[in-house]
Amino acid sequence: MAFNKEVFRTRALTAVIFAAVMLTGLLWNGWSFFILFSIIHFGCWHEYRKLMSLIDPAYAQIGDDHFTWISVTGWIGMIAASGQLLDLEAFRINEPTRLALPLIIWALPTVVGHLIRGHFPTTRTLIISLAGSLYISGSMMMLIHLRSGSAWGASEPHGTLASGLGNIFGYTLPLIIVASIWINDTMAYIVGSFIGKTPLSSISPKKTWEGTIGGIILSTLLVTLGGSQLLHGDPGHLLAVSVISAVAGTFGDLLESKLKRMAGVKDSGSFMPGHGGFLDRFDSLLLAIPFVWIFCILFMR
Image 1 (cartoon, rainbow, N blue to C red):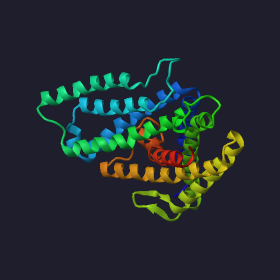
Image 2: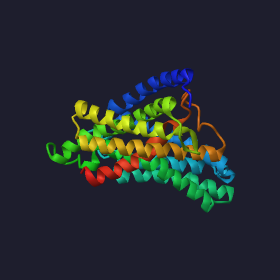
Image 3: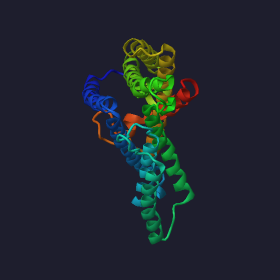
Image 4: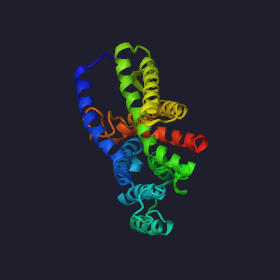
């Protein structure tokens, strides 16, 4: 794959602006984090619906009420996973009784819409929507859960070990995941451009084994060394999270490439020049999050 300076310049300029927006959302506070990933959540759902409609024309026939309800339900799930992240002093945003009412309100238009049209979604349509819920909303819920610190019992009294882990990893872990994926993506592109010869998969012909392996190695080294120095994180945890993020992120990119090939499109969207749409930009993150979440729940509590 020959190195294209114009493509790289466009991607780099867009990436700088994108990185500034992402870092602001990631680091400012809990609300900025939630708002950022709420936008990403709905953007990914919009493009997922478009791709699935091209793959299966029957899915294009679902009404806006069905799509709205399934995506908003996932967003409410993100609120439910937020722990104390969005609390307004003593007011708990994610109290079950407070979340039940919006779910009921959003369910009514869906049911009424189906009754008016005289038909309900087919089993295949429901499976596609359920897959989207797991793929997009499920990943976003896990990310919010990690950011909230709830995975480490951050709601426990201040000063306990669990509270400390929640404050440290809850705040920095999403940044570590994103950094691992960004560095892996950039290094894989650069290494593959200069020495890549062996195609990784027919799904994505431009990716090479040399670039993929080089990206994973460099990403792991940079995140582990940088994280241990700047964040004073445990090198073992940093190593594991960076490896999981880079490897799972690579498969996430291939998965989305497969969906685009099935849909017959080059990009899932066009909101970022040189990078495509929301799914193009966050496909790696969507698959990396569940694996990191499982690892953290099992080994970092």
